[in-house]
Image 1 (cartoon, rainbow, N blue to C red):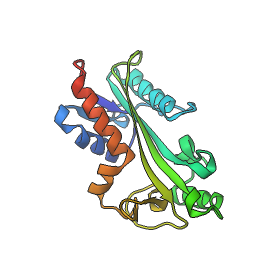
Image 2: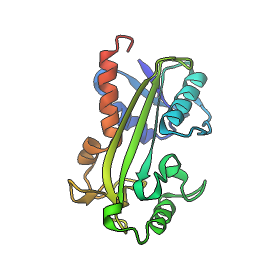
Image 3: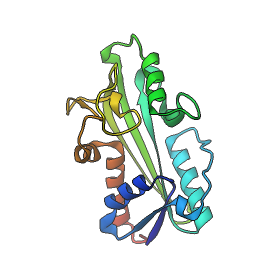
Image 4: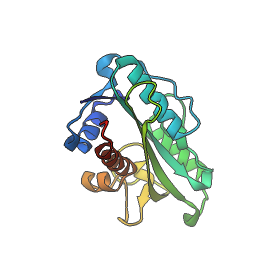
Length: 199
């Protein structure tokens, strides 16, 4: 079965394909079909994941899978949240986003720096699917005061995982994939697809 991933990132497509390999599905990035990116106008991770999946299904005619994820920081009332990728502006890179986050957290004591990565996956059989599969997972941690580690991307260098005594950017890939919000959400999705006769 072919599933279009509502992402133009071939690396993410490979990651999803590996996680769902036992289901015998072919995960293809939407860039192969010329799918235009949709504006993420939702107010929640779930709304944005559904918008992206529906857009990919509409333009390809295939089932579509999308994820929306971000960092939720308690001391910042949930920011950057759904705006994580563009926190420092529409063209911001990871360094700019981290810099803005650290400025906003300056002076916040360690016990109030709790945070979590959140991932929501939405899988639609077709654009008008009234019962999409939706999986959500989170990864608890603490924000640190300066970046550490060279692995990962996004906010990984400032997301400290207490159980591992390392930031997400210091973890090896296998450990990160096992613990991460996306890894957990993909495991939930795999189980749901196995339990759903339509898949």
